[in-house]
Length: 70
Image (cartoon, rainbow, N blue to C red):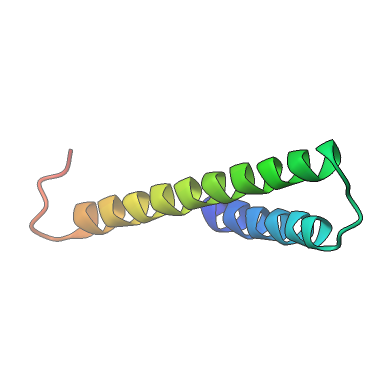
């Protein structure tokens, strides 16, 4: 599923960003911007995961024998 791939890639980006933020290599505005980006990435990942769950719920619903469909 494309959503699974996107979520995995998002998690990898978050880990790279988290490592950068936690490394202490950034100072001042650079560190603040890196922290904001990390927060944004984490929010996006949460939405992707929520959206994926909704898609899977809908697929399960439509796959039920008693489902009348859309």
